[in-house]
Image 1 (tube, helix red, strand yellow):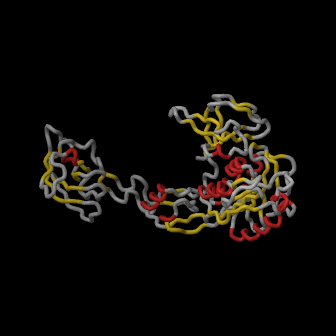
Image 2 (cartoon, helix red, strand yellow; image 1 turned 60 degrees about the vertical axis):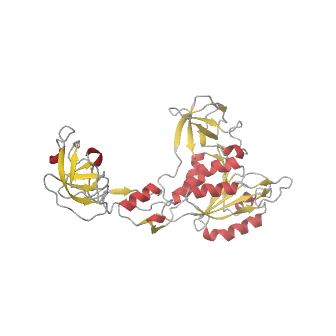
Image 3 (cartoon, one colour; image 1 turned 180 degrees about the vertical axis):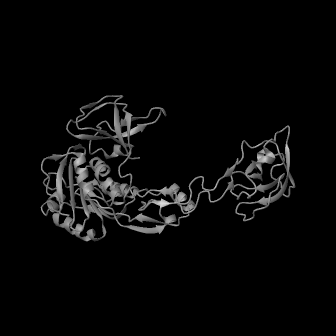
Length: 419
């Protein structure tokens, strides 16, 4: 795919996102052991190989019985049964059970063929006693089949289990194992390189000189990438030198799917990303109608690798990651939930908004009233793109449409949840 040309004028958030997603392709799949698949994205639908439960089994420690024998049991009219067998969990035995008889049974044990109900030990006089010959039932089960988990009552063989595009978590893995799977087909993990550009950045803990600042964008993006199921294979700081940047990219492109560059994408005299990659046509640059995050760069190499340029201001980089980069990386994985959840909540305090730009304001949740969650800005400046320290408190971003000029206390706003 040819690299895009340098953009003219301004574009909306949705236009720029669509440009990126249109160029994003799902990665190939591979089979992996299910027990090692947590965090990976399922590449194909799963159906149950085994029924869950796999057999009729007891939900309680107690006694397997015939419903007809105990239906009238009560404290005033107890029923005494002969105990003719014992079934610990995992036992292969199927003891015969005649009228007036019971079998001691433990939770998870197969219910004998001739039993149809389980009486919990709490509903008997004796409880569970080693070597017991009789049991006295004091309370009748509510109905036939009580306390019996039926074969396939959760899923039957062949039933849909998990959908392609699901990010496998602990509960998904447990469900798939219980339904008979030991391997799954998952999408290959995307490989990401992230570089922060700027001669003012220091990333090795060295003393700061005049005009220098600690590098933080690369660390932030790398951690956000890991949360999105992405492998970060290269990180670093690149000074404002065109040749240096070109050489770094040449070295890393062969083993990456996406390269993210922060900084150097605006109109400054030393914007190295725009200078080095814009002149070759490898990246295009656009002014996106958003605050923060207005300057954006994007390109596609001849072999389909994505090049993404984000603002150097940390809040702008963080917002741009959520709006543009994360959806692309999840689309690469075939995820069914490529976008963050959005909820609509009232705000505690108002603030002005810039008309003509989609505004993203870092907010924290106020959950002091469980019946009505609210949000408040994490900083007085609301949308200042340099306020990275305040960003640590953010649970999400309030997203205000381009036509918004003012938010009042109590107004409902859409909140992009990130925590």
